[in-house]
Amino acid sequence: MTARLIDGHALAATVRSDLATRAGALKARGITPALAVILVGDDAASAVYVRNKIAACEKTGIRSLHFSFAGDVDPAVVFAKIDELNRDAEVHGILVQLPLPKQFETDAVLETIAVEKDVDGFHAQNIGALAQGKPRFIPCTPYGVMKMLASINASLEGAEAVIVGRSNIVGKPMALLLLAQGCTVTICHSQTRDLAFHTRRADILIAAVGRPKMITGGMIKPGAVVIDVGINRLPDGKLCGDVDFASASEVCAAITPVPGGVGPMTIAMLLANTLEAAERLALHPSF
Ligand SMILES: Nc1nc(=O)c2c([nH]1)NC[C@@H]1CN(c3ccc(C(=O)N[C@@H](CCC(=O)O)C(=O)O)cc3)C=[N+]21
Ligand SMILES: [Mg+2]
Image (cartoon, rainbow, N blue to C red; front, side, top):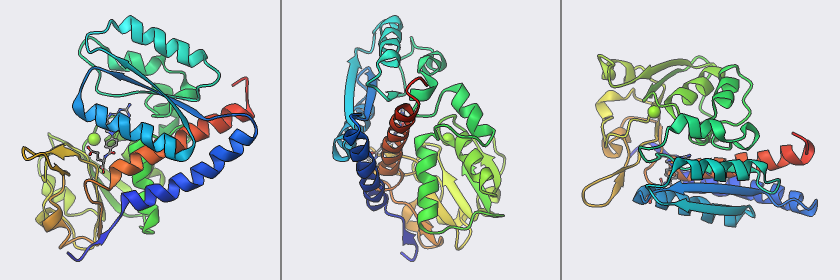
């Protein structure tokens, strides 16, 4: 291994310590920052992520409220809960864990969350604000990736950034953020004709497809920065990313591990957005 490792756990701990200070300052003014998490169904991975989120809240002095519903729940029940949380002045952030069961229209659910409490940044208005270069909440995974790039002083102005994956929650907002920092951005996806042609040009390569080890060393430009957003569970139970770490780390300059990379930073930025929401609501109580 020749590449520098970008340690998501260490960076997340740094972010959390700053957040804990800010949470303390809010509490001194009588405001306890609070995040409400809604989980529908019994997806095992979702349960792990939600547990990690709640544990991270506790470490940081953020109150967490957790609401679980059966997988066959009537969507009206979940809409009613969101509505109640939207009105609750003691709740600053609301997150509905994705994916939702089939009977839900996901966009309709996300659009129900009050924009000023949408700490995932998935509401159409918040995505729109980001697209216009006036972000209100930056989606947590791409936000965490930007912090990881900053932590190694990656130069972004004029850099070739290639994103593999075009999801609304990672690929698209990631492209907007890199674009805003001066990268020339390419988004690749399942219909891209020659994936390796694009990835080999990348100074910054972001893998967010959900296909285990699909990006191999031969697809990477020597000296590139490689960010692995994928979290795949192999048949043996081990986690791996979308990047083949062994071959990639022989070629690139810096790389994120899985686990211990983007995942912990995603959670840290969720807490950051929750604190941001609480601070804004403290400043503008009528907001
Ligand atoms: N409304 C919503 N917001 C999200 O932010 C959201 C979501 N839905 N649905 C699913 C994805 C995925 N996601 C992760 C969060 C933490 C880890 C994480 O903690 N990963 C650990 C390992 C966890 C494990 O052991 O499985 C790590 O990479 O080291 C991973 C993935 C948030 N997401
Ligand atoms: Mg994607």
